[in-house]
Length: 134
Image 1 (tube, rainbow, N blue to C red):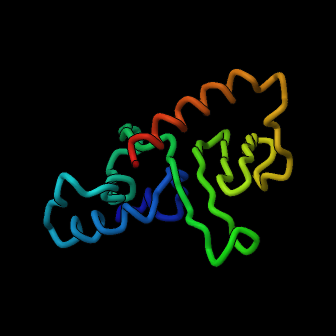
Image 2 (image 1 turned 45 degrees about the vertical axis):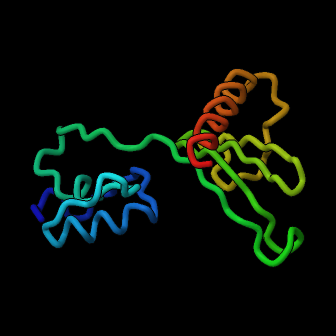
């Protein structure tokens, strides 16, 4: 690691699906093409800080019900750096959060007229990504 990369922060989205490709890459092997995720060494081994590496700008997730819907209900979401669109299938509830102004997701803005365009775009993208995993 070069001295210029010590004590730096990288706020790119890394996910649990990146773990296996990262371990495989560290072993000097190439992950199978069908494997989801990416080797995160692309982020921390950059020699030139000006080098731009395309990385994920959003991700879709699903979390199954745990025990029952009143304990931990199932949830699905599209997450970006600035917004998070959530759907709670057990209750039919949709939510939208502005993560820049509300990082702890305390203020649901799903009914905000000023966010109607963002909501529409995120719902569309959510449906697209959800269809890809089913």
